[in-house]
Image (tube, rainbow, N blue to C red; front, top):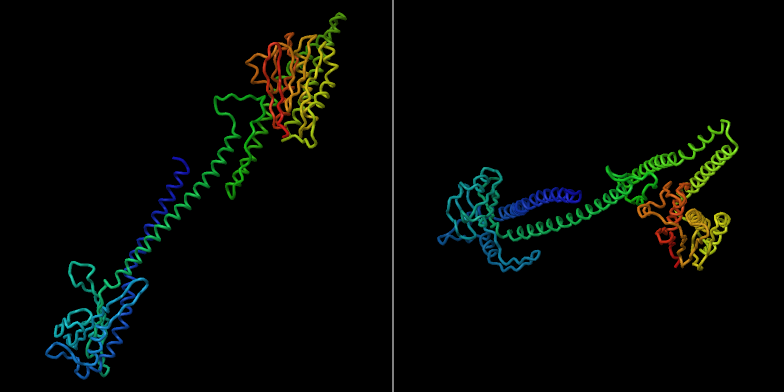
Amino acid sequence: MRLGIRLLFAFFLINGIAAFFVLRVFMAEIKPSVREVMEDMMVDTANILAELASEDLAAGRLAAGADNSSTSPFAQHVRRYATRPIDAAIWGFSKQSLDYRIYVTDTTGRVLFDSENRAVGADYSRWRDVARTLRGEYGARSTRDVEDDDTSGVMHVAAPIYVNSQIAGVLTVAKPTRTVQRFIDRAERKVFMGGLLLLALSAAVGVAVTLWMVWNVRRLRDYALSVQGPADGERHDPNLPPPTALAVPEVPGELGDLARAMDRMRARLEGRDYIEGYVRALTHELKSPVAAIRGAGELLQDELPTADRAEFATQVVQQSERLQRIIDRLLELSKLEQRQHAEGRAPVALHDCAEAAIAQTRARAGQRGITLALQGHGTSGPWEAELVTLALTNLLDNAIDFAPAGSTVRVELDGAAVAVQDSGPGVPDYALPRLGERFFTTARPGGERSGSGLGLAIVRRVMTLHGGRMVARNTPPGFRVVLEFESAG
């Protein structure tokens, strides 16, 4: 399972569980909380009415007549309350009825007064609200009008009626719970919709955080893959420089610290691998001239004819010159590989660089009977003249080694490209992909392998610093190398 899927799954699981329990708590608390507030207000109402009813109860005016109705002032006020017109807008809901039922019992629990005339004369002494209040305790109860209907509940809150500081009766205020049910339902809907919105916003934040995390982790992964060594079974050429790594990802926090640590590790690993490959290749390349010099030196210690002595001395000089060329070009290549880009500022004409390279190699070409020719004018660009001349000089040296005597090596300029064309035997097709590797050489026309294999490596590095490329191909008869620079326009 991918990291992003795991993070999303974990986030949604945690978020879902938290949302479930939070919503469950809120939804479960709404109804009791509303009823608690309702009961609190009914307690105040019952106690106020109990005070108002105390005089009529003490005077015996609350007792119902033959028609089960009381003519006491308190009873008349309560009945007028029940018939009052009402149209109140309460937080979006319209209230058009007054819902209190009020009844009064004596010290035996017999109902003396009932605002709805439903229970006058009935014995309520066993009801919780009346019984507890008569004992001096807080009396309240909730009873269903219809046994099987949960919405038919009625809340009863009682208060004692005092006469001469003694409990002379009980006044109970009753209110159907359905009158506040719509407020409860609306609150539950709001909480539920708010919970869904919170869940959606949390999910959006979770997705955004996950995508951000996965994106940065993938950048680190890509960076790590760009600097890793070859896997088992992959070809690793020690002559090639380490592959170019991606830029260090700019990520914040601990991921940024990890990226910088990976970059430091990459630098150390690349340096170690580069040096190891360099040393192996250099050691292999130096073995041949060193062995030749050693062999010739050992023979020169013996008595030899003059001709043989001269031949071995010449061999020592030639191999020493070969070693010198390898060292010089290694130094040039090492300097180039330490640089990250060319430092061209003022426009440089490819024509001027080509003329300078031809001037440096004309004497050597003349010794081999080869003519150097320049064609075209080329363009100018922000290139580093010294490096461009160095690349062309190495190409010309290479072409002179392969071109037959009496032939012409042409330098052709075309816009931001410059080509060196010879008429030699070319390069085997299998060797074309490896041209430019350090110390990789092919046989000269005479069968000797006198090259160091560093000339084309220098050329390729110069093109890399300029953001261009080197293209080599056979053009029977002959071989052609094209340097394509980035256009100044």
